[in-house]
Image (tube, rainbow, N blue to C red; front, side):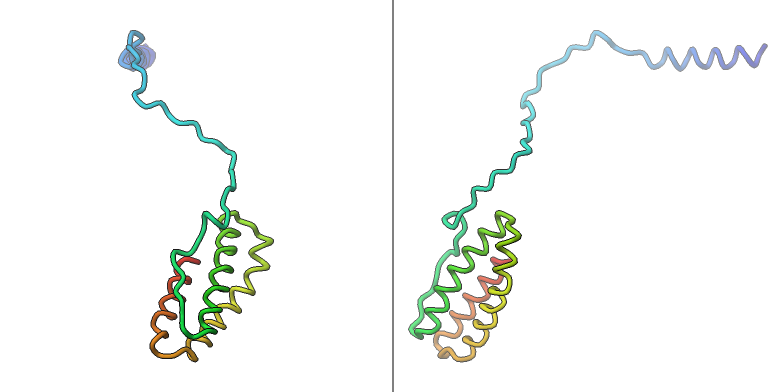
Length: 129
């Protein structure tokens, strides 16, 4: 008999101690949550993604390279922002070619422009990553 009464009393205590308050006043939220949209809108264009400033060089080959590289980087950034795999596959080898050309050109450029050219290449590398 004691075996039946003790669990019954213990159960009654547990159920009465977990009393639910039904008269609780609910206040509206100060800032309601914003609904998340699952739609992804790709509006990145060449105008949205641009390199900050393009330096000009007296050395004609360097100046031409900087302009070409800037145009390429703009299209590369647009492809990256839009996650366009097809365009990235096409632009990947071109990126390697531009990087190799930049290293070769850095060796031939006159000393007074070498620092600015190297800074440009470094800035582009950081923007790509």
